[in-house]
Amino acid sequence: MFAQVKYSKYHALGNDYLVISPENLAFELTPEKIQRICHRNFGIGSDGILFGPLPAKNAKFGLRIFNPDGSEAEKSGNGLRIFCRYLWDNQIVQEEEFEIDTLGGRVQGRVTESGRSVRVEMGRVSFQSEKIPVTGDSREVLQESITVADQIFSFCAATIGNPHCVIQLPEVTPEIAKQYGSLLEIHPYFPNRTNVQFMKVKDRQNIQIEIWERGAGYTLASGSSSSAAAAVAHKLNLCDSEITVHMPGGQIAIAISDDFTVTMTGSVTKVAEGLMSLEVFEY
Ligand SMILES: N[C@@H](CCC[C@H](N)C(=O)O)C(=O)O
Image (cartoon, rainbow, N blue to C red; front, side, top):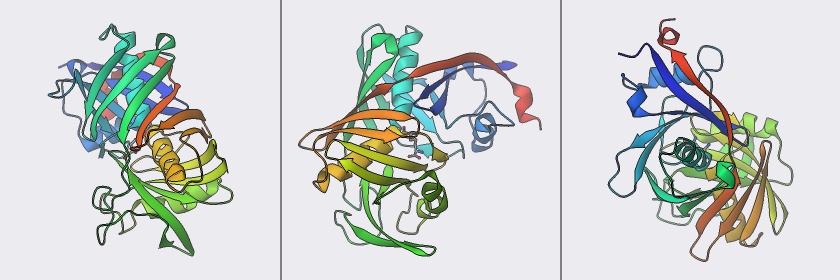
């Protein structure tokens, strides 16, 4: 049993993740342990844990993605971009382009600028209720009504492996995301809970979003949220197919193909490498 756990920390536009390799871990990552590691006072602190590389059937590498509440996410855009950078930094890959398997499907990553910028082909966005999932009849979930607390919002829902609820408003603020995001995340319409984006369409090439992440809460940026919100803006013909997504932590470039396959490009920053003491689990 190791007395310490080796980790690497990165952020993508302020969305921060710890990468832990299975070879450096001698215990199971239970929800309680994940909550403690991600806790910003009692642990190292992060918006999630990337556990890999793991063996995979369909790709060179497998990756499991955990939220700070201990739940497992099918996909994470920033998480995947960070994991690509980690593989590159540690010379686990020599080629710039490679595939990673997640619970939410296989993605293709491409490292550029020595890892400072990473592009990921995230897969195909679907608005189909049973895929997201959203309760009720089989349909594309576009501009429907949802009531939370004192508000009725018009929303669209989408999946890119993980679920998203996109609400277009004339102005978006962190306060609105914090006030309504937690309620929408657990709304009965979404049996697997949902990530939530409040979206302002600035023009045909630019949107601004405020994010409430499933299992993580308010975050400064999210890659799958950027993908889902941009896909909704394009689907509603409010934006073209190349969209810059503005978030509190910075910008991500999204390109949407005719079949709604999304490619995402943005920066990744290395923060630290360290050794976590097992004492964090004692108190
Ligand atoms: N930060 C992520 C999304 C992480 C997963 C999400 N919280 C979920 O539960 O689906 C991103 O960059 O996509």
